Length: 397
Image (cartoon, rainbow, N blue to C red; front, side, top):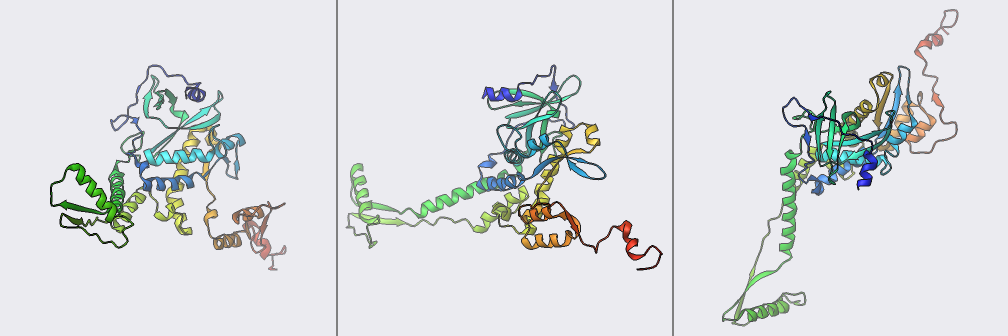
């Protein structure tokens, strides 16, 4: 583990004479990954997994935007964002892990490893035991990470990717998930209640009373004999015959069953806390439900990731020249075939799609010379509209 750790952080040097960062709310800027074991809840884990699986499909891209057009930027940077951010995981793995941390701890961290020239080399998600914000004598902000193996590293704030959820009471960190812990405890209690109910229904219980004094060994022997004779599957008649020396009194247990509405209420409470619906979790959503999920959950994540990486990877001058990182998803992948066909039918005549772009919407392979744009003659450039209505002599055609 030490070798793995040193390979990632081999260039780090601890800043001299640091102190804990002051925050406006007066509290300490220290993060500890407390989740109340939320990930142990099958409901919470399934919900977080559904968000992370879909968010991991977002495509990060370096783009350069000008008033005239937008074009892709550095191909090497795009490979890090889209294919392999570090030697140990894919871009999907990175996004999945960061989004999972985001919902478990309301804070997600990653190390932006850069070379001597300041260019991005790799991105490593971090799973620290604690994070402390500190400053040096010049007021520069740092993050001091403590990991489970006892290793400690201090990174400049500019080298740390940070996204926060429930960003309220602390100036630098998101709040904890203590608000949902009662619902998670209730869900755990319900699961235990169901388990005990099933066990109780599968157990035959009763009291076998003997009208004479028997030794403990003899009582145990008589009990085993009674069970083998009458309380096994082989007793097809279901009738027990005993003489006057013993009396058998069955105990009828009526376990309390948990109402389905109670189960659904707790589940709904957890889903609403995460901002999703059950149909998103079990993948039975409609086109409109997916659109709502994208706009309310995935799109805010994409905005956070885009803004954070843009600020941490580019200088102010580079940003002024249009350099940025954007995270996008092909939302039409989840549209119905009728919607896809209608979009192509309506927008292709306007010249908004190339042939290959239209084929991509339909999940079909590109064709040769498919980068051409088709446009109907019924649509004309506004600057040339008069030429279609007036001839050179000034009279209508």
